[in-house]
Structure formats: structure tokens, C-alpha cells
Length: 264
Image 1 (cartoon, helix red, strand yellow):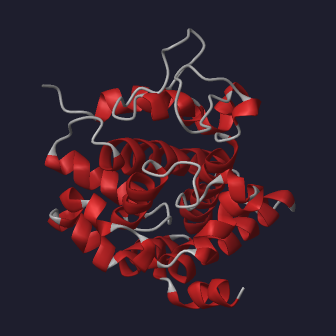
Image 2: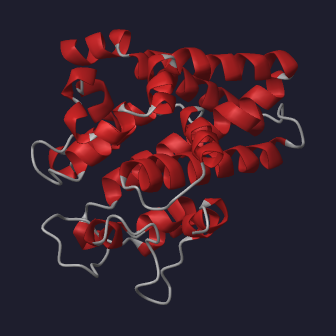
């Protein structure tokens, strides 16, 4: 508990992003429930969620930067990196270091930071408060550490995040809450849910005989979209299309990737 409190106060992506965005997200939902939200809140939230969840985290942090799953132009890489950064889940270097360097290397072992073996709430969000930034194995992300764009975003992550959010709030407080804060809140908790549930193999099925407990969970499709075909991903990690092994395995994130990728 003392380490969790210390991490909460000292780790930038927690106090500088995840914690305040949870507060702002709950406040936005409260205002929707009591009828104080503008009539266009749902349009702004859907747009923000598409750019953060689908482009920034799903296509970007996960499939492009973690697994080098598809080619992009330099401009598109920077755009995707920006969308991922404003989702408030930390810099790409931190996110990829955890995902590539720990989760995939040590899936469902005591070295996997968000293994459900340690309980649902641990894998859902508590692991974020238990890890220290020094726990991330930087040797597994040499490509990102050589990239000046990723290094710049990592170095100035909190400043960039709140500069974008602050300027938006100055223009329109409603735009801040419903175009940025609420979509970031939704994106975070969608990924928290999928991180937890997609490693309970009894809740789904496998197409690949992997050594971990990764599973495809069809009933998560509506909120996670293609990310719910997690066993497909662990069985063929570099493939940016997580669906397609069976007719019902649709992957809307991959459809967006087809629009973003560079044609060879």
C-alpha cells in the first residue's frame, strides 16, 4: 500500500494523466445524467473515442508501435502518436515497454504486470499503481528509443497532454469534457476491461494453441471491437488484423488501419 501511494504521487503518467482524467470523466458522466451536457456531447465523444481508442491506442500504441504491424508515412506516424498521447495512458515508450517487454514476453507469469492470476482488480487497474517506471525493460524497445518523436513525447508527455487539454478548455469547456476527457476515460476503461477479461480462457475460445491463457471473447466485441480477438493476437502478434480466422471475427480497428497504412 505504501508503494502504491508513493507511485501515485511520483509517477507522471498517474498523477499527470490517468488519475485526473478519471475524475474529469466521472464529472462528465454526472453532467450527462443530470442533463447539464450540451446536446452534441455524444457526437464529440464518439469522435474523440475513435481518434483515441481506434487510431491512437488500438492501431497506434498496440499494433503499430508495439508490434510494428504495418507501414506508415512519417506524417501518419506522428499523427497516430499524437492521438495515442492525448488518450492519457502514458507515453508510447512507457506503454510499449510494458506491453512488448513484459506482457508478451512473460504472459500470465509473475513477471506479467497485469496478469489476472493476481486477481481481476489487479489486472484491471491496480497494477498501474504497483509498477515503477524503472520496472519497464527499456532494452526491449530500442527502435522507440532511437526515434526522436517517441523520445520527445516521452520526455514532455505531461506537458504536451495538458497543453492540448488546456487550450481546448480555453476554447470550450464542453469540448474539453466531451471531446477529450470523456473519450479518454472510456478508452482507458475499455482497455482495462479487455486487459483483464481476455486472459480468462474459460470465458472464450482459442484458435491458437498458445502457452498463455489468452482467449477470444466475442461478447466483448461491442466495446473493444477487434481487440477482443486476443488469442488470435497472441498466436500471430505481428499481424495487424486480429479478426478473420472465423467469419464472425470482425476487426473494425483493422479497417481503420487499412486507411492509415502506407501502400507499398
